[in-house]
Image (cartoon, each protein chain N blue to C red):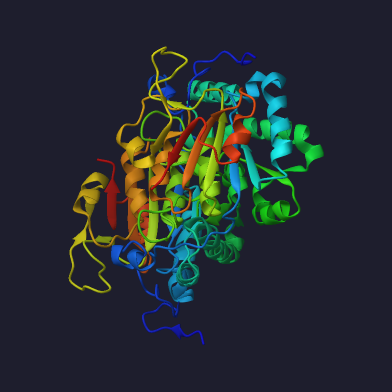
Length: 275
Length: 265
């Protein structure tokens, strides 16, 4: 039986957190447990780069679409897309105008949504569907009917984007958004499809002596974070406190078969694991 | 297989590292807006005894100020967090569920303020605030930010780090407001929970960095708000006032330093 408590002018519902301050460290600690329920554990999240893949048009996209259409019979996948060069243009104009960070965050999702629609048009005959955020809990339905959901990657922080650590640009981009999407649903694997063979110690487009990192752990990566990253830095920051995501892999989508091999569990590209 | 790129200062860059030296001269949207948060456990759960005098104060102040209200959660949110923790749900699920109670509270506030122009606003209506202000309305919204399932897991425990204090603070920052007012049931910030430890020190004015460094066991504002305060471009002050004390909110709205001011240091 639920009990109500009064007597201090407030009406409380009996619970372990009743009357407590949720800022109190000892109270917060009581909500901790080693385990956490995994909502959709066997699903792989595949993020397709905006600038790296989409902005290259059909030559890059059509082979990937074919790979995805074959892979969907073997793997339960959720797809996400980046926004690419239009996002960068949006940011450049918005910065020039002096728009607030939250306002900039509000703008960028639109460019990404266009890529989700492109991908959906290409994959529709294979059962793809763009998942609107309000339809979050339809994801299991899509998956159990064998569909291929495409999610909006940018997290819905919008005007509420926290002040960035430096500069005016929002910190929570589409790679981070996909990561957190996977994490909240208890997914263990994320594959990012980009236009490089993986993660390098510096930008391989600018430095010919850049070295690819083949396999590493999150702890090692956090210790020696490359200055230029092919995925959002926030992703790694957030991964530190995450409970479920075990493996983040970055593969070259311009090379045929790489995505399929990654989906099959092969260590191609760069593999980062959390131990 | 070339990239079809639009020329811009950021073209070709990884967004994670590109923009540090980008020229930027910020323009605040509505620097004169007064952003208020009405506490959940501290005010709403007390019912009419606490709320009716505050409604009167807000109605009177509305003639002089553009007031935007965010609602807190309270005991029902705590009950949700407790059940969700018991079920070992992820933080993002707690954040999504935790949004329902402040939404109810915002709707309650709207009903009470309707005759004075109270209007319930959703996250997606944020861009309509200028219209509501111009019509003399008092827009009221859930204090919870829209992060929901996309909330980050916290270091320890599973309570979402960004709750209604953070949401209202971030809304103020987006508007470019200089100060945000949190209406609670204490005279301000204490060195520990005054409900459990009477006689504990009341801090009138303190810098956010200094407060973080003091690493107090308990706080009257969410911890992330202090972090945001150190980095914010516009909202450089958080004011905590006692909503149970007649006139304190009105004085705060007039710009008086009642209660506690936590500032960007």
